[in-house]
Image (cartoon, rainbow, N blue to C red; front, side, top):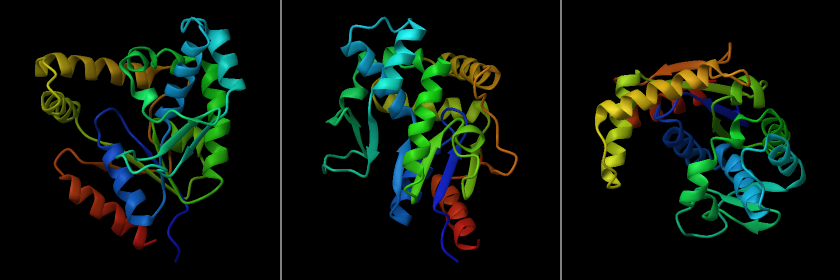
Length: 226
């Protein structure tokens, strides 16, 4: 049996979604697609146009008028994919601190989410894609061939994020990271638009006590056993 052509991976922050999605994409030779890059692209486009990022209507209009595409890496510089904004390679530009600081605002706008969902579905229609986010299996790709919901206890996810921060030289206590994680979980799960939750037909994997290789192997076996 052929492997699933569209794989949706959802889950809360620091649940290991990115690591799993990248591993699966490489294993299968698929496009790795973190939908978060699109919200970053909209943020970049709005800032370039001098638009107030708090202006819902203006930012949503921007999302509807720009062209965003996500492709396999076109440059061998460590990128997991290539992001094009109106034909320009913005793969690294959307990772600038200014974008980090403001991307959460456009991602809450209904108009932005609706505009980007259309593009995300168009990219998925090409097939052979591993798409990762927080509403892929429930909203973006409700008919995905395989849906994975990756989870872990909030304490374990906070520990992972805290260790990751320290590796990158970022100070801060574990308690502060845990509080922020709990707040993020609450916002994601209670928001009116596309709240975070497993799709009814998703395979839920709690990796609190699993290593990264164990999770990857479990999902590969799941794919090969379909």
